[in-house]
Length: 235
Image (cartoon, rainbow, N blue to C red; front, side):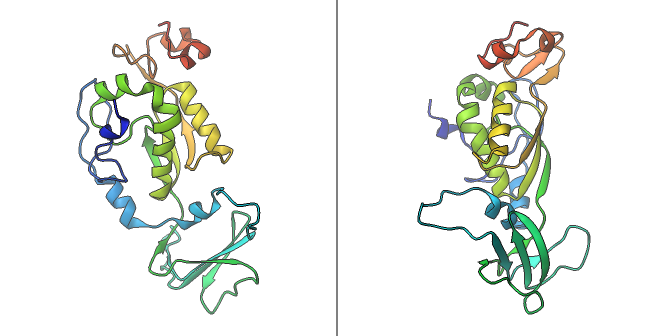
């Protein structure tokens, strides 16, 4: 089955659906304005420029970057700063000011943020990288587990980052896969937010066929890590 045919309502195609709640297989998820809010709220450039990007051997990267011209919202309730200047050195914010008031270091890479809003990275406190824009749990959970780690989770992580989310809590996913994706993001191998993960759902009894990412009763104690990585659960 073609994975792309099931990306209905994903953030890149149509901001219509998001997994707002978990339920039994086949339960439909409610509509959400999550992605629409994220898209108009801000264009997060700080995270984007700090990501490792492919560089040709003949290219050099400046250690200092300047975001110039945008409206800065600091997240503490202060008056927004128009025509802002943000100086970043080695992925750290070194200074904040306004055009004409804060000098831009010589040799800095200048990135225009004119007409944009710049603000600190957002947190999403409840995500599931294993689900990407789909509303049918039964179909998704039985069709795509083999693509969770290599395709779906990396795509979900990138969507979060591009929406301005720089930290997220994943509260239900196969343990081996979510740990692997979290660690690849930490190493700079994947674009995505800083992840805090719980591993599988914990419930009284997993729904049939969902044991890979739902543990129930004593299952979390009886499942071996290696068995879970192979897609098997002995509970």
